[in-house]
Amino acid sequence: MDNCVAISLLRHGMTEENERRAYIGWTDAPLSDKGKEMMYQKRKDYEQHDMIFSSPMVRCLQTAEILFPNQKLNIVPDMKEMNFGLFEGKTYEQLKSQKAYINWLSNPFSRRPPHGESYYDFEKRVEIGRKKVAGKIGETEATNAVIVAHGGVIRQLLSTWSASDKPFFEWKIPYGGGYQLIWTKEAFRRGEKCMSLQVVPTTEKLGGSSSVMN
View 1 (cartoon, rainbow, N blue to C red):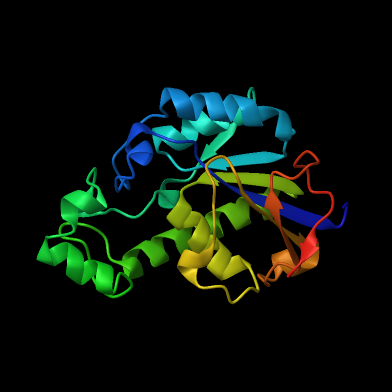
View 2: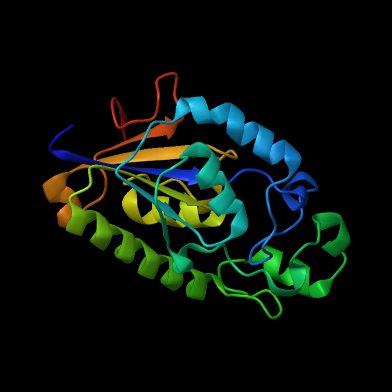
């Protein structure tokens, strides 16, 4: 792996809003007791990494601190989840009769939640964050990094970094899990798609070892 770069994209642990299946984007909710317990159980699956990046949201910071104790966190503000505006904190059942919600749900890639963020703005923001992370990895010559972020952010990063043509919402990203992507150092420097992808954590500790080809 000396000539490779591995980046793991991990979703934060559960919050109380996640447990009741509410929209939570820029709502800065902490991990729930259940979420913390799940992350402590997963900590044994993760090793030390060269660099740890995190969304600034408290649920991501808490997750990173539990999974990677005593490691420096590099905060990336652009890795925040999409802002769901007036839908924040509400569930499908609470919103399903509202016209604005029905319209947005029918085409979330072209319509904006009231007082929220459009997919276009979200996509551009995450791309800025992705370039910042790639730049820092290149500057330090790190070979193994982690980004602790949100479901939507991870799906967007996979759309950019992965060679897979899987649709945005078909990526399954469990709490405290995600995907590891691997490049050769030269391919990563050139901004190419990753050469391999695997679900993490696996039966082996997450550390940039084996991978499954796209």
